[in-house]
Amino acid sequence: MEVLIGLEIHEQINTKSKLYCDCPTNYRDVSPNTNVCEICTGCPGAKPMPPNQDALDAVIAISLMLDCEVLTNRPVYIQRKHYDYPDLPSGYQRTSLPIGINGKVNGTRIREVHMEEDPGQYDPVSGIVDYNRSGVPLVEITTEPDLRSPEEARLFLRALYRILDFSGKAREEPGTLRVDANISMAGGARVEIKNINSVKGVYRALKYEITRQKSLLTRGEAVRRETRAYLESQMITVPMRTKELEADYRYIPDPDIFPLVIDSNKVEAIKASLPEAPHMREKRLIQQYGIAPLHAKVLTSELALADLFEAVAKKIDPKIAALWLRDKLKNVLNYYGIRCAESLLIPEHMIELLKLVQSGSITPETGEKLLQRMVKEPVSPLKLVEELKLTKIVEEKLLEEAITKAIAQNPQAVKDYLSGKSEALNFLMGRVMKITQSRADSKVVIQLLKQKLKR
Amino acid sequence: MKREEIEKRGEELIKEFSEAIADVKEEVETYYVSELVNVVRIDSEPVQKKDFKDKMLKIAPSVDEEGNIRVEIGKWVG
Ligand SMILES: [Zn+2]
Image (cartoon, rainbow over the protein chains, first blue to last red):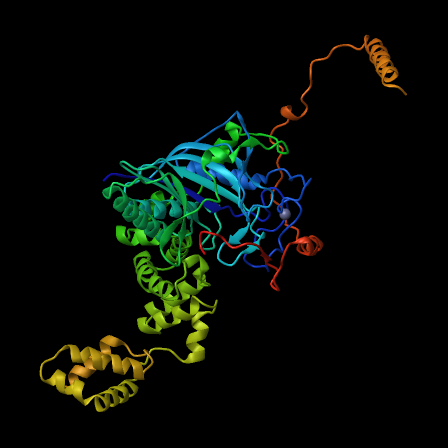
């Protein structure tokens, strides 16, 4: 059964003040209903301020990075899109006519790019309303229904998110991405799923919806045209009638806001100052630093990581830097469940750390342990090594002691090794590392263990 | 005043007004607004409005201790 999926993606733009008022945009950092004024809470008679220029420029830049044609030298009206929902105090959301059209990402056609204002936050489960977010600038990106499966949707969103990240215009915090998905199957009507908050959520909502529609169609029942909500906690979609269908939005140009006419010279200027697209940067890293394509791919999965790599590669052999960032740092980030942009690691500290490892002052194992701390606090590894006395053990006497201790404490492993089980040696090495707090050179330890336990 | 009198006086007023504006030159209608485009503002340091917050929460139907406004819960999640 053929499946057609189109997505509508909303991502916040990183400005200091909101789109039509000068309230702050840091809505996560303040208590509920703090960043609010007459304008962003839609008080009767409140006139919006003129649109935030930086938000508009960001939408133009993003359109260009999505390979869109930017519509120049014609009026782009700001429209009022009406709907009735507790997150929308004025009863309408301001959304621009298309600014970019006909783009492409990973072979999926981008239909339109708009500039919008974010509504407030309403939690239908608790009935809580917070207007801090109301009026934060958004870019809205709609695709053609080119996606054929949840997997394709996931890959597309990852690629799109990478571009938004590399544009430097989107908000860094996770969870700012919001997606509505349209899905239709042969013989059924188009169903819209609202308010999905993550790439994983899109994948799950689509999987659920395909199963639901398939089972209706195979039983000979109709798939109705409707809007459904995705319930994250239960991983299902349910019908939702509060938000209306497209025709009911009653768009009108906002009489309080003058139309925008984008000058083609301005577009050229923005084009000239665009940051490097992620796929271009991936290619460049391979060529310029001679690193493996696989490493380059991981390093360009996130702007902050790519920047960190290039800063470190100025002082450290790029291949070693790539290996450490791709493996060790990525492991630590995954362990904490954070992105590189959220870590407190700075390039100077990473360079310091790798110099310590390269000079043999500390073992790679110690380096990894230090990295775990450096991601969470901006501490100099050199200082940590001195404070915690983590330098590599070079005195053979100390090593001997640790090895003797490990052998004495683990007779079974010794027995196993002597009876031919080689992996027991690794276990013993692990014990030695534990006793020495990873300060021993693992290669030396293995050698010494072999000598001690001659089979 | 009687109804007929009012009607008569009304007619007179219209006639007088027409005579008064007879010499005014006819002009093409002017749309001041539609000629203005690209009125934008530069993103600047934001301003928090504490007094507005207090006023708004005072007229909200229901507010919890954290400052959230409380409204109906969604029918589709119940
Ligand atoms: Zn405001």
